[in-house]
Length: 407
Image (cartoon, rainbow, N blue to C red; front, side, top):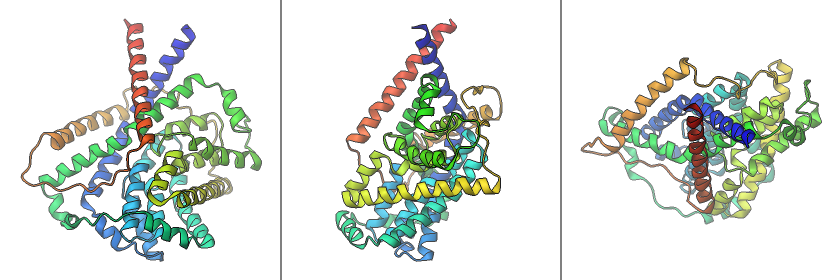
């Protein structure tokens, strides 16, 4: 019993430490994202994403880069763009860019993993788009695309989006909209973050190394894994991610934990890229476009991320940039020491307090409407919510136990 309680409190400390490491990065990323969401209109995005030409694809990638990193919000925004005239390939490019090339994701990865993973995330995001583009060209799913367009229902345009960004950025109403959007970002990801970070802490404390050695062949070896092992890691990573409810932001600490256990660079990159091949995403796409298109997108993205991860692994190896497996141990770090993280987090606590006042208390004469698409709430979303609430209860009880130990 004592051993269990020790592991329990260790799991809670690890989860709290992981979140403390990442709090400022989440806040900074969502601040930037919220400003872009308010000051850049979606109607302008749609205007330039009507075909599969190079210009439309490039602009789709750029619009994805400056959008939100929440997987479910990205899915809903992509649906909105697609049903209002954006081409399938630009819509897909937007979706991949908005979940792999966004600023806040790179910041989170830089905290938990080495710089090679940040570079790999951005280069890999571009490679994912190119691989998907090639596979779509080869498979020619025109009939599926037509069926998908028939499946979605257009709910009209947002005429109020055309207000000049200069008027927004210089008005109190504009910054109130930023503040409200900021908390909407947190509202969309809190379940993924709560559950994902808690699972990472639980796995760190309770799961023995033998499990990783069985699941990922050759992960216990000190030398570099052979091609067969790297390929196995690259396939097992997405398969493991498929069974989770964790989005792109919540799975970063778990990816860092897997890396500390000896999983190859390719396997970690495949795991990080897998936020769009998890089961909830499959179901949401099926609701938007039909099951045939949803399964097509799943297969398309799975093949693309496996190929991309292998290219990154051996490309980095050829360039001499492949990171050392023993270079990271995020579990044993002192997460709460007085360093730059503490002071930056303190600053963003004040930013959150200011935004809370702006969003919920400060009244202004005019209001700039928010135009964030939310994924439809279904049973899986409810399950994730209850899992997140369970995680919060788990953490609260663990926190009480640690206070009892202290006093």
